[in-house]
Length: 193
Image (cartoon, rainbow, N blue to C red; front, side, top):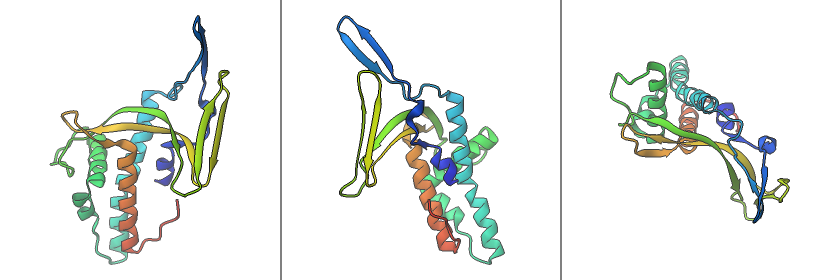
């Protein structure tokens, strides 16, 4: 699951191919951060991540049964909107449609998957991040502390009416965090990310 979550971010920027263009007004650089990515490829990464997160329920259920510990995964799905959305996305993918009432109260769908550049200065006082590109398309990345520059797969999770429920990567990260807490409360040791 951590590997799938990590696949949403890519720190290797070598796939970026800047296009240096000129006209009578001067030179400029055009960058398409999604270049080389296909809609199908991005959807495959997203689907794998959803499946890995949602299947934690069944793994935890078996672990709890073997260790005679109460299983609270159903409550987590019912009480946490991010976990419920991921669970519903997984069920839609597995069954092509939901044959039961969705746990999130919505029939979620992922739309607009793309790659974008994410520059984060991090949370530490002295951390920083910068991304620059000169007129020849030469990139320079500098980070310190907890700063980062990544290509990030992002998209929107929408309901049956096209109303946005949240950003795909945010929903997945919050769902993963919630499952990790549930696993820890059950006594499962969790490796560090």
